[in-house]
Length: 445
Image 1 (tube, rainbow, N blue to C red):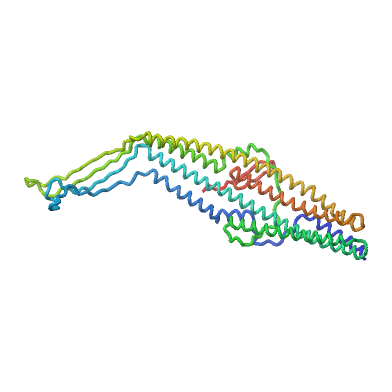
Image 2: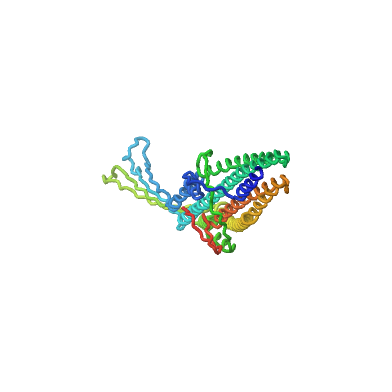
């Protein structure tokens, strides 16, 4: 009777041990797909909204910088006699209305406007860069959460298997063919699994709170992810082409180039500061009363032109030009630094992707099937007393670790792919069968 139950249990354990994924359930509208998470983050993230507001504020500056200063309207009362305050008593008394306008030296306004336009363009590219990084961060956290869910599933499945191992050990012990220490060993491994489950649940809550923050959800909102995704990880060829794409498309590099143009415009403006600005003005003077011969006193018109004199060029204009020249050099170095950083990001992300892709394929195609066969073989051998229980438990735990390692490597490959997309300045990467990249652009505005 007992001998008939044990082989059937062997088959059940073997089938369970070789399953690497849980079955997909019914379609749930509450499941958060990765593209849905990205869309929510781009629409709701407060940090990104702040950057967009800043860029829009900077976009309003160029028209201001390119406009003339406001003209001045003045009202003057001149030469009023203090004895009578009669505006018609003296011929020198006037009521004046004046108008004046400052006129910067030709070219200054256009340079100020150009500098502001370049700064505004740089801010727009900064927004695009933040969007890319936000997409990368959301995908990174999403794939971390997906891995944790798969690890929890594996723990639960192994918990059931170990309970069945306990049943096998107890059955053999009762008929005098097993040892009590086998039962105790299995129970110890069950306790270790529960400890791992507690750790994974804590990690899940932490990652869920982080993802909720990126999506601007309440931090304690429960998030459900799909139980199955495409496990395709295609090979990527031609790193040199990726570096060219990054140089051309990465927003942070475009922002740095606009910063250089803005610095050059400010330098040209500083060089023009040696040239004076002008102020043109006109006053109309009204005189009341009559001349001694009975004629009406004539009104006056006054016209004035003034300009500033750069008498302190050594301590002012010269220093301004020197400052702006050094800022141009600074922005060039910042571009060089950003280019080096971007190249390093591309190479690192690609290397990580290739490493984790190879590891996940090795786990899936080689190690896990072999480990599953080993567990099934050792279980059958244990039931006929050819393998001790300790080796059987070790084999099952090893299979558990390999299955967890597969999903860890798969998740890390997906995260590296998200980082590679950001590094070359794109939201998504589509890899064709030949390993070449096809990309969907991310909006700048």
